[in-house]
Length: 81
Image (tube, rainbow, N blue to C red; front, side):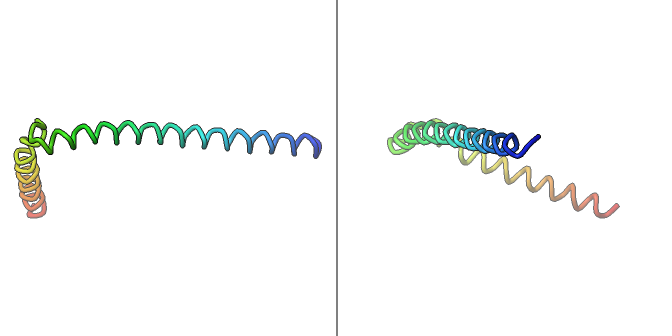
């Protein structure tokens, strides 16, 4: 490969890398817009008290606490043996 071919190849690689990074940025941006749009709808429902997920928050917190306690007890039991 001569010098001119190498320079052309490097320019092509650079262009390809920039194109991939721009596409990646666009995909992340569209995902963020979608999530934020959906989040606005949930926020409006929470303000009126009609959001179904809001009623389950205490249930999920209780389950998470219970799972953490069980895991701690299992870790203590394993440490004893």
